[in-house]
Image (cartoon, rainbow, N blue to C red):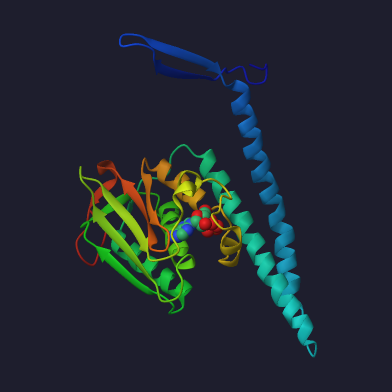
Length: 271
Ligand code: ADP
């Protein structure tokens, strides 16, 4: 421990040793946790500092009038696209830093009927008619949690389903009950699928199956990390099934404690 922060952090691990004995492994993780905090602060600060210059670049790019120079128009368009990508990256990094710093989120009633309508609209806007988008709601209940963060998690899954499904494919958003009184929001696509060896690492920051395809699809590489953090703050988990060439299903699984009776029709989510 240091004089500035006298707290010592330890990690305890119980390992079975024999039929009647356990090994207790005690590790001092004070330094490790402090380093982790330094990394988090660094990422948050850099991201924050990048916001203002990016806003300035955007502003000036919008003011450029290519006039009679078509090649200038192409260049400006590309610069706009790239600076928008950078802005999205910075926003996603800030979202992750914010989520990492939080221990809990507000417990709000979350009406699922309007949420599903919004998700469907978002999918259709992104697809621009290239996919069939369907929604099924058989859960008959709502959720409690942070509306903003859960919307961002669900949105990320829907956006991935569209971006990693070729034209002509379909995306199905299902809100359904699970055994034991819980509920799940599943996003199923008929897209490229993910090879099995990538599955264990798929929610790591910047981990991508095919870098070129992911870049082309316009993502930041942080979407699934955000999903994982949001779910963990709701004591929920991410389930994933995927088959190459057939498609993937990403499901957010919530326990009974997150389930809420659905309000009367016309006032979804109300008590
Ligand atoms: P990205 O911005 O690259 O999409 P994500 O964290 O959202 O970042 O996803 C990580 C990687 O997981 C993607 O680059 C892609 O390779 C893979 N992936 C995510 N969702 C799907 C999906 N529905 N179908 C196929 N691959 C997917």
